[in-house]
Length: 219
Image (cartoon, rainbow, N blue to C red; front, side):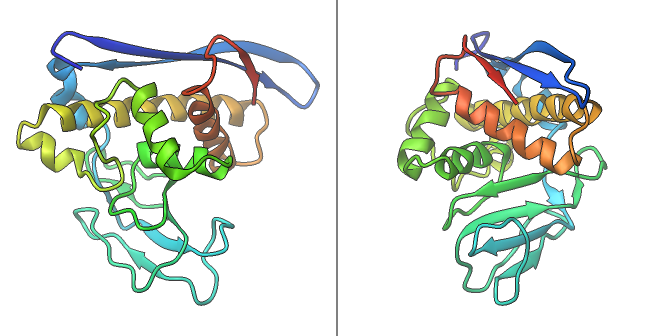
């Protein structure tokens, strides 16, 4: 996106509580061009002291024999002979100082884990080829098709005044903020845990990107 341009993605969802009462609401993700990007960077920085695993059996938790590591103060980690989806949980958002209670994922072989790689993996978990899922996320969020979300450190590149990376970082922040809002609504409606609610919210946002976003979807 160019300066002062925006892209908007909206989807409807219904929250139902244990008594069967429900409400319909709409979540909208607005991605701004480079004008507002650097200001948004502070809301979604690196995650320190987070646990990262190579989830070989795709169950979302660490099992014996699976690679595991903890991120350092800059969000870096090293996994020895990882296999399967990369899964990150816990840790502290370095930019905000807040604990991270959700889960981020990235396809096997990725060099970075972000909210946008989590969308890619959510589509892949739904049966889409990773390459097609990657393209769907880029297209759905109005990002340049040549961007590699699975390797780009958008924060570092944004600091070097890379406009495309800045757009990626803005999208990442806005997606995570939207997922957080939806997850909190689901928790308030009786979801088993924030983690489960967050995973559901990521899956719904991902599924909405290549679909008819005007369709009502129930979480």
